[in-house]
Image (cartoon, rainbow, N blue to C red; front, side, top):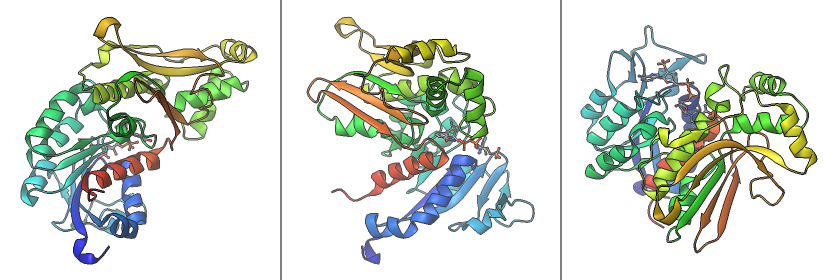
Length: 349
Ligand SMILES: NC(=O)c1ccc[n+]([C@@H]2O[C@H](COP(=O)([O-])OP(=O)(O)OC[C@H]3O[C@@H](n4cnc5c(N)ncnc54)[C@H](OP(=O)(O)O)[C@@H]3O)[C@@H](O)[C@H]2O)c1
C-alpha cells in the first residue's frame, strides 16, 4: 500500500495491565504489517492508569511509558498525574479509537463505562476487552455510539481470540439464530480436562494456578461468572436483546467431585462447563444458563479440551455452525482488540 493511502489512527489505551501491555507489544510487532496489509498506522496517543495518564501530545513510544520493563512515572515528562482521558479526548478532537483494558466492576460497569461513554461523546470509536461496562449497559452504550456515529466492538470481552461475535453477527447474516452454546472459559475447561485425566479438583486448580492459567483468586472463572458474562454479551449482541446478568442461571465447577468426571469418562462422556442460550416457547424470553453438563461423543464441543474454548450456533438456514480454538491469554485478548480496530478502519472489500 503506498504511503499516501496510509491512514493514521490515534489510540487511547485505558488500563495498562496484562492485556494493555500485550496490546502495545502486539502493535509494535505488527506495525509494518498493519501499514502494508490494511493501510493503517496506529499511534498511541495516551495510556490511562488509575492515577493519571501517559500523554505527551504526540505519539507515545514504549520508552516514554516504561523503563527496563517497569512502568515509569516519577520524573517522566510524559506521565501526567491526575490527567483525565476525557480531557485528552477533548484536546485531541474527533477521530480515534479507545482501547478499554481496565479491570471492571460487574455491578457498576466502572471504570470502563465512563471511559467508553467519554470516547463516544468525543466522536471516538471504542473496542473493549473488559466486560463490566457491556454487562451493565450494552443497549445504552450502543445507543450512544449510534447517536455519535461511532462503533463499539468487543471481541476481546467475548472469548477473546475465539471468534464469537464475528461469526454470530457477520458470518451468520441472514440466518436466524435458534440457539447458542459455548465452552467460554479456558480456566474451568482446563481444570475439567485435567480432572478427566485423573487429577482431583484441588490438584487441577493448583496446576492451573502454577501454570498462570488460573488467577490466584479463581472464583470468577470456576464459579461460572466469566462464562455467564460472555453468554450474556454474545446473546445480547447477536439477538439485539437486553438481558441482564440476573437473567443467567449460574452454576460453576467449584469443588467438583473427581468421581463424577471419572464416571462420565467411563461411560464415554465428558463433563464440560456449558454456557447456553435457548429460545423460550412461542417467541418468549430466552433462557440463559451456565452449568457443568455431560456431553457425549456426538456433541460438537466434545473435543474442546484444555484452555481452548468453542461456540456452536444453531440456525434456521445455515444449520449448526461451530468454531473452536483461539488463544486464552492476554496476547489472545490483545489480538482480538487489534482485529476489531482493523475491522473498524479497513477499507471496504
Ligand atoms: N487477562 C486476560 O487474558 C483477559 C482476556 C480477555 C479479557 N480480559 C479482560 O481485560 C481486562 C484487563 O485484564 P488484565 O488481565 O490486563 O487485568 P490487569 O492485569 O488486572 O490490568 C487491569 C489494569 O486496569 C487498571 N485500572 C484500574 N482502574 C483503572 C482506572 N480507573 N483507570 C485506568 N486504569 C485502571 C489497573 O492499572 P493501575 O496500575 O493504574 O491501577 C490495572 O493495571 C479485564 O477487564 C479482563 O476481564 C482479560
